[in-house]
Amino acid sequence: MDTLIIEGGRPLRGTVTISGAKNAALPILMASILLDEPVIYTNVPDLRDIHTTLRLLDILGCPAQFRAGRVRVEPGALRTEAPYDLVKTMRASVLCLGPLLARMGEARVSMPGGCAIGARPVDLHLSALERMGAVFNLDEGYIHGRCARLKGARIQFDFPTVGGTENLLMAASLAEGDTVLENAAREPEVVDLANFLIRCGARIEGHGSSEIRIHGVPGLHGCEYAIMPDRIEAGTFLAAAGITDGELTLVNCPGSDMEAVLDKLKAAGLSIAPTADGRGLTARRAAGGLRGVDVSTRPHPGFPTDMQAQIMALLCVAQGSGIVEENIFENRFMHVQELVRMGADIRLSGSTAVVRGVPGLTGAPVMASDLRASASLVLAGLAARGVTTVQRIYHLDRGYEHMEVKLRAVGAAIRRAAARD
Ligand code: EPZ
Image (cartoon, rainbow, N blue to C red; front, side, top):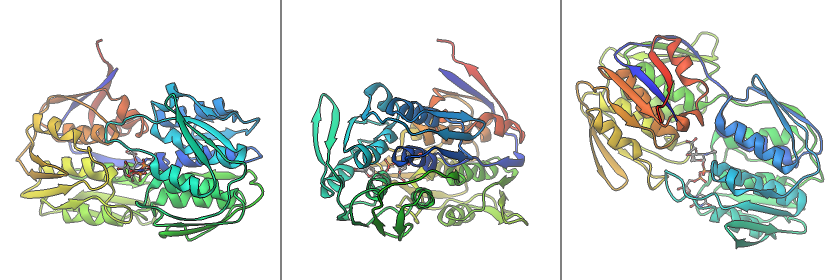
């Protein structure tokens, strides 16, 4: 398992190009299952989870080619089983459920299994699909769903689930009649999926609001579609500029859909401004230095849970304290103990972490546990005095495209080493 070795204390300066969004690309690639024509995607990030999704599409009968950010998928004779050994590596595999039921009337998808950041069940997905006529049973760890023809329904989500909204958007696009999703997720990645489906001929309104209306159509055609920029990668690099007291310009990052993150980072002492062409952002530490702020993660448009670990790293070296409340996942503080090993002063109490800023962190060997925790440890390593080795960075590779290459290009002393087993 690879390791990242970071020699901290170097301000990052220069330009970073933000890649396509993992959490938009995954559902949009899965939506290929709905199409009866080939489809071309561009700005697709080169990530482990993307390649896992393309392998799953191959298994399901939609062979896909990835070449330098461009993906072509050729939907063929569909198979309906998503195998355990693949689903266990990526929870988002469950996003094939809605499309398979809509096109084939059947789906056998392995239960996603536990995840480092919490139980993450799919009960909201299943109960919503049942409202459309699907029948599920669980055998041998597989969710087996059947439905002769999905029928439009009015569905009220108990929680604005991102994956649940995405599964239902795809299922309802080919269902008979009208579907209304209430308390739907408003994340920008959900909007990107809806825009893709509309480009393929779906009839969808209200995406981006908490009530989405879908009028089912008989079929969906192919198209060419560019994946939206990754707002979480962007937020991570903005935090990198602040924590290293450098100055970074992010390209392909308009900053739209990032208001909560930008507001919070500015309150924490960053100066962030749009570039002249409006297609990027420039960030550096403001004159007053970093300040402790309180953060509560919320569904969009609130502060995203996927930026919680990263802003916590920033707060570790701010003046004063900040209270971080994680309201989306029940176990998303795995980075805390590792940050404490680097000298951070963080006290946990249930879903709340109290972060007291310290003058500086010291490098140490630390262990990544999930995707965003890995990013948090890299940020801390960039700021720490001395050398930090981040182990198990396959977690990082799931969601950040060539992160160490991008960081080295703006002055970080960082390199990847194959771990000595
Ligand atoms: C998506 O996960 C993202 N993943 C996550 O990003 C992100 O953290 C999350 O949305 C919240 O924004 C992808 O888009 C691939 P949810 P998802 O359904 O769809 C509970 C990253 O780091 N829940 O909104 O799984 C669930 O347990 C990843 O890029 C149910 O109880 O998120 C969780 O506590 C991590 N039952 C909460 O809701 C369900 O049926 C949010 O889940 C579904 C969800």
